[in-house]
Length: 286
Image 1 (cartoon, one colour):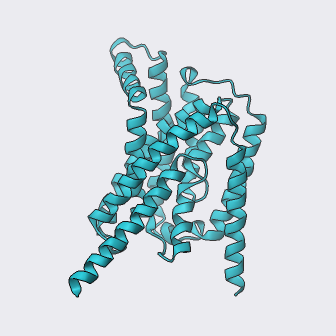
Image 2 (cartoon, one colour; image 1 turned 180 degrees about the horizontal axis):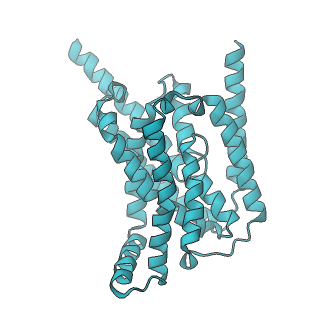
Image 3 (tube, one colour; image 1 turned 45 degrees about the vertical axis):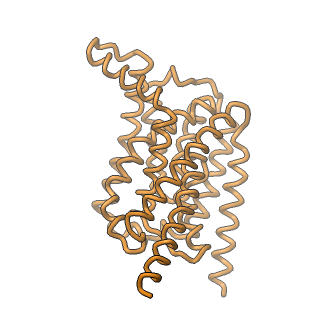
């Protein structure tokens, strides 16, 4: 009986993390906020908040996907940096892209360290509440709409400069607020900065590799020790499902943005925010 109960609990945990991995994969690279959906979906299903540690580790699946998808780009960046170090040629496009990624990663790392060291109640704070997520989602939808409207869409990846990386990196740091969306904030900032849509998305994906990887590695011990996670196997299931779905989402988004605008995501974020806020208000009034 105990064995059956344990098996049932393990299967339930595997299913739960599989679903979370699918949600993570669908929402990490689309500009709609993976953190918000990983908070809302478990509440809707009655599973409860999976917590910062578990969601951060499941994000490693998304990193595996983006590294696999952009392996040739990453190889060129590393080769460009190595060549720049040897020959002091830092103006080469691949070297400049590496510098932009490095500079763009610094803001979110510093902000993350500040939260980790000086905000012990972050995980249960009001900033991670449903009404906060809803309002933030609506605000970010409006900002994306404005960027879509006024952005000149001229810059391409080969013309990236360090200042571009830093500017988009500052926007990436806002993603520590649930509902902002890392890809959404970086895409919005890049559009304001004059990037073409598909190049903005590619840079956003590459920029996310260091930050999401470090976030997952920092939380991996806590996630495996979290009883609600169900153990190592369920977490691995979540990572695998996140990896597969993330790869498909990356491929789809890059092809979509070559011919289409971001208005579909603006509409979705507005609807998502309004529905979550209405749901919370209806529950608060009961």
